[in-house]
Length: 79
Image (cartoon, rainbow, N blue to C red):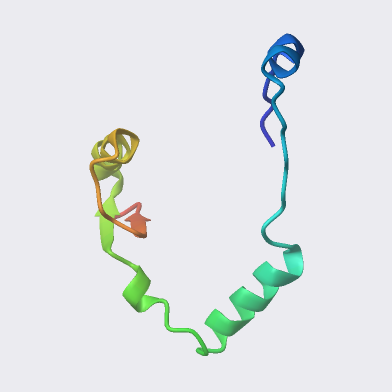
């Protein structure tokens, strides 16, 4: 988990409200992994590309710039 800093003065002067949430539990992930391993969920359509390590910097730059459409790209180290 990474840290974050928030100015208490900003919260107070702007009357901000901060709400946290947790979307998934460990049992959710275990259930999903089990469904994938059992073949109950076909993940192949989710993979939009496979790239080699040398292509990774360019893809990360695209993602950072918001100019890419891939949903799930696998990085093949030997690729």
